[in-house]
Image (tube, rainbow, N blue to C red):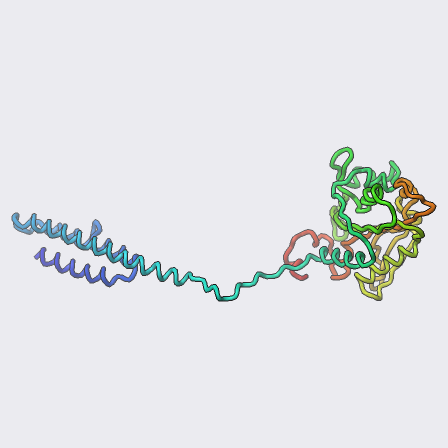
Length: 328
């Protein structure tokens, strides 16, 4: 009786293993028939009912059946492995003839776009753009620009000092001395970049901001040349109908000095300062002030895209908030 049951179970296992469609199913069949509590193993409990002379024969038959089923499972597992590998490779295959997936195109930051427009307009007027260092020498940031030693801007609280002689530049105008000590007129130089000041950060002030500076030295330069350059720059950035205003103002590095503003809506917006380069600076550079004169201007860049795009908070430019940046 036990022997017949063994044959029945083996035949059932053979059929199940042959029909198994996955490695996971084979694992379950192996446990079901050959595991510690498997159906073949359970047959050992009935060996006690056999006559003594049949017990060894049944044990041998049971072990042989286990070996056959183990071999059958291994062979079927290899077949399934090959089949599953082929199916996986087919599913993961890449059709190289398909067009690639285009990555989303990035857009210019509003400050970057504004600075590019500034360069476009000023290069069109003959300016050469030169970069200056963010960490500047006090010599160029203040002394070269005709600042008296006790000028309020010299106070360390107005800027970020690096050591006794260097600071994060408070104005891109610091480039003037670096250029003038190595060049002879005529020239038109411009620079645009970051500046740093000790400021209480709010919607209209920031410790990091951007400026564009331009200066030119040649024979016969007057305020009319300065006005023409700035009017063209304003029209290039804000449209052909923009109105530019010049009012007298004081800056240590120009004489006379003017405040530059534009009409925007029903109010005037100051962009920065300008004027004719102070004779003290020209003389320090070794230029003949009877022959040469020059103009200089420094304008805040950050306010320009605020007007162009209707932005009401300066801090948004540097917050790296995608909800803001994706609008441009």
